[in-house]
Length: 204
Length: 204
DNA sequence: TAGTTTTGCTAAACAGTGTTCATTAAATTT
DNA sequence: AAATTTAATGAACACTGTTTAGCAAAACTA
Image (tube, rainbow over all chains, first blue to last red):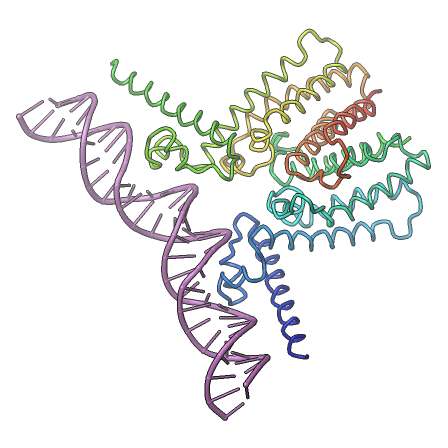
């Protein structure tokens, strides 16, 4: 039955085309300003067609946000290449996370700030994309705690504290709240210094 | 010229009515889902009338977000009533900030997560509402540093670190990213424990 | 091969959004 | 009483996400 296979292949190709176009438009124009119609025009299909492949806009952008997690995961793995010291791992992963956010602000926004992808997540499902990244950080923290290099006792608390801090910093930057600082303050520099300070604070 | 005065008064009353109604609708339905038309219906005026008092939706919600800052400021001041120890001040203000976010999640969202109010802020203007709150925290931190109760040397770094951490935690909660944790994890409890851990970490 | 069914797609519409503007009705001034 | 200023609006514009009836082309069946 080669026909069915070809059809399935075409379907997947179409899904991919929509997905990549959505990603491209979304990164260029931002999530809020990206319309289904704009994506449809770019792939030269009618807007209604998109709804044959994705349930709604939230579901489409959930798929896009998963692409972001693939990339982040990759970079979080690459960040500790050749490293064995858990503490150094933590530092590198902290910087890698921040770097990702700086280089892909729109994608970071969709992944960790925007409501869209979480609205597509049904109550009983769990957030697999998130889980994988989170597990990596937890492993690093766990080893750091076991090696007594960190002033933490519980991984959960450590994970929440570290993640919240970096996410807070990055999201305040992305959503423009660092206007609160003095005009001449070099924000990016201050962010790096804060991350360094945080690393210093958790060192046992 | 009593007529002109009455007119000015009426104008201010109208602005206030729009503002308070906007606040009410927004807190109930969330920012994105609050429409100018819904506010107009509630005050029994046409949607166009709102545009005679506020330039656009962003400007109206900028005004609403300022109400939030008035309240937060109040609570940040009240939080340290009768306290003189800078370290205890920091703890109380940390909890007060978190409590505010918990009790007014929609308002917190508008104040610190949503794009809307910052879009209403012209490039040359500065964010006064934010500044006042920020100054309070900086004072507390400054005194803590001077009293050598904190492991910080620079207020800017301290402020960014502490604020980013609490904001990160609160915003990850509000935007549903703590789904990343185990299902049975008691998030609110973990958040308190993390805040306590953080306070412990910065203690000199 | 001819007829039937299935598939993939779309035009058009629905119900909503923020925003603008000519027009009206009322209040104020002359 | 007439002219002017002001406040408010109805109706429209240009969008948005989403649904649905209908239409060709492809696939299947006789």
